[in-house]
Image 1 (cartoon, helix red, strand yellow):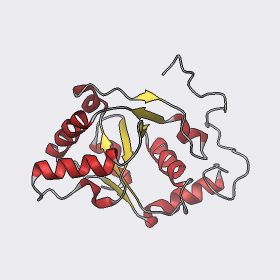
Image 2: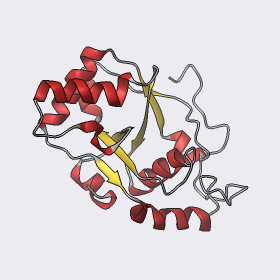
Image 3: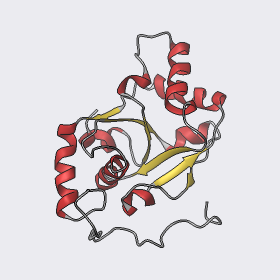
Image 4: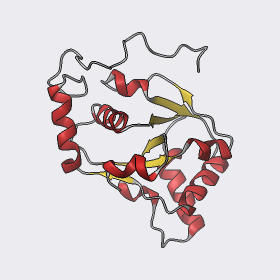
Length: 183
C-alpha cells in the first residue's frame, strides 16, 4: 500500500504500529492461527510494555510520524513497514490507546504518540480481526521517503539531521506534552 492511499483506504484516523520487518505480518497463505501467533509475537511481544503507536488522520501527520520515527534510526531513508489499526478495532477488544510523550526528534511526531497495554489474548484477537479484512501493511521504501526528507530539510524539521532549530509553523510547542492527568 502506498502512502498516498493510506488515508483513503481507511476512513478517518488510523493508528500505526511499526513492524520489525515487512514480513512480520505473515503471508495470507499461511495457516491462519500460526500467522496470528507469529505476527503478535513479532509485532508486539518482542517489545516491552507499553506498545508504542502513532495516531494519524492526515497526510501531514503520516509524514511527520514516519520521519519522526526514522529520526531515531541510522537513516531517515530506512525502509519502514507499518500495521494500520483503526480505533474501533482497538475498542472491539477492550484495548485503549493512551496519549503519551513520544521520544522522536520531531515534536510534531511526539504529539501523535500513543501507547497501549494489552495481553497476548487480546492482541491475537485484534490481529486475527485485522487479518480477516485483508488490509495490507503500509510499506515505504527509500524512494517514497525522499520527497518527505527534502521537505523536512527545507522546513527545518528536527527529524532532519541538518536542522538545529524547529521552524515548522504548526509544530506543537515543547510544553504541549500530556500531563499524567490527561492520559
